[in-house]
Image (cartoon, rainbow, N blue to C red):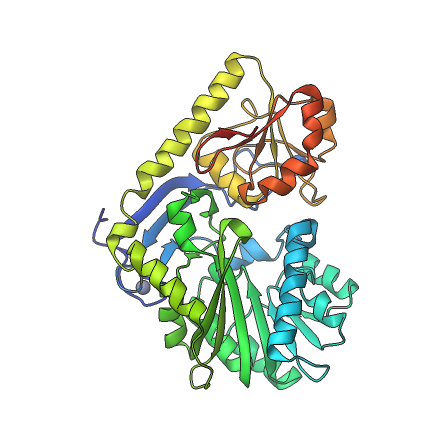
Length: 414
Ligand SMILES: [Zn+2]
């Protein structure tokens, strides 16, 4: 599929973008939860069009929203997910052992959020430095004893931090590489801040899973890029980093953890790197074949959710949603679902409670509200946490309630 001549340019390599992955129309910002008291007549809507670069194969959405509009008031606190905090603890154990970190090391994290990760290093008396532009999350991190700078990360910030704190032996960057509009400036900041033998790790949802399992709801404005190892290596090479190992992780529906060093470092390539390269190559990740046909799979998911909600309505069944996650908002808005279809959404994060979901205007409440509403169906929006959430809300079975997921296809869980 090709677009009209005035194509936007690839944020990584600068080539014109002429191939569409999927065009999701216009939607509000997925994380712009609305306070009931100041709800505008209509939410601001922005185009959400995912394209593929035919040169470096970075999948990306049009750059329509300034990062300040997204991240300064970012309402996501990592520590509200038990499984994510446990994941962070395992990472701290692994990295400390693998890199031989001591009380003389410096561990930095870009997008350190509320200190969910660095707290595990600080607990071992390893000096830490968090970097995050979100003011509220940074406050929460400091309250945990995690030193945090409220900055957007890039080459200039890295230079300043290196002058102030010295070079870092480890820099973690979890679920942030996809969130930056200027990916080259961002990546070159790691090369600037790392010590000569330092290592940076990046975790991001793997594009291969997005494509194979039709995880189109992970496409939203805050995610500027959708990353394959192939596209990441292309970008890193341009900015002074070299990937030497890759792990496949179950988080966020299937993520990669990429281990990178400075380009001239002597570390040897590990088998994990070759394994993921081969897997991507077998899928044709650097050819158009991997991307064509995605749109029709997305349309099938929309029909599946529509049919389910129509039938529930016809049978006078109540539907609630669990997890006011950004990905849920992409799904609900693309499928034109509103509060007539889903009575309420619940979320553990108090910052999201008593708001309305952007676009769909479904009210968000504390999970306790489920006991009053007694919904027949509970649609789990963050399908990556479906086991954790269905266990936490097992009590809906008391009144015959059932859990439902919409992706990769509509399924009533039994
Ligand atoms: Zn490109």
